[in-house]
Image (tube, rainbow, N blue to C red; front, side, top):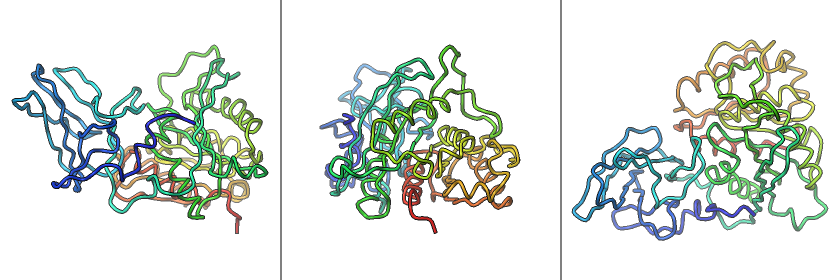
Length: 387
C-alpha cells in the first residue's frame, strides 16, 4: 500500500471543534493545533519565530498577509473566509519562503508544499467513510520509452483480493502541471471518492492507474513546458508512447484487467486533461471513455474540429460509435484564460453535433475541489451498460 498521510487527511471527524467554532485542519501533522479552520472558512495561522522580524502567509492565490508578533514570539493572523477545497499555502519568514512545519506537505507547484483542506458544507463524497475500502499501491518499473525508472500509484477496488475470478476495467488518471502521480490520492482523495461511489452502487469497481505526466523519450531533452499548447499540434512529451507502450502493457500483464478498448478510460486535470485529449483522440481504438477536467483548448482560441485533436471530431457519428462518454468539466470560478478555452471547445462540440457531457462545478476555481467533483460526476458514467 502507499504509506502516506492519506488516512489522516479526510476523516473529517478526528479534530474537535472549539467553542469559538474553529478546529485544527485535517491536513495538520499529529498533535498540531494550528492552523485552525473556522466554521465560516476563516483560517487562523500561528508559528513561533521569536527572532524573526517579519512573517507572512499566503493561501493559494489569495493576497499575502502580514502576521502579528506576540510577546511570546508567536506570530498569528486570521484570514478572511477561504473558498472550500484544498489549497497550498506558504510562510515567508524574513524574506525566506518555507513550509509550515505544522502541516503535511504535498507535491504541488513543482515542489513539496504545505496544504490545507477547507471543508465544504454538505459535501462528503470525498471523505473517509465506514464503507469497504480499496487499496492504494505503488509500483516501480523501468520504462523502455524514457530509459528511466518510473513510478505508478494504483487504486485497487475493495473486492480485488476477495473476488479472485473477477476482471476489472481500468481508468488512467492524470495529474496537473507542477504536481505528480501522488496528487489524485493525497490531494484529490480519488480512492475515497471511488470507495464511496462503489459502496453506494453508483460506480462499477475499477482499477485506477495514476502515472507521472512528465515523460521524455530516451535521448531527448525535456521540453520547458507541456501546458498551454494549442489543441492541434502534438505536445512535446513522451507520455503518449509511455502510456501506450509501457504503462498499459504493464498493467494488463500484471493485474486482472479487461484488456480491451471498451473497458479502458483516460482522464486528467489541467495539463493532464490536455494530455488525455491528445492521447485518446489519436488512439480511439484504445479508449472508450474520455474525461477532460479544466484543461481543454488552452488559450481559448477558435477550435477547428476537422483538424484539431487528430481530426477525431471531424466525423461525429464515427466518434460516438467508438467513444461511449466524452466528459468536459470546468469550475464556474476558474480563470478566464482556462474557462474560456473549455467553453470554446464545448461550443464547438455542440455546433458540430459531437455527443459529450458538459459539467460546471459551481463556485470552484482551478483547484482540487473542482477536480474532485469532476471525478465524482465522471466515474459513475464509466463502464456502464450503454443504452
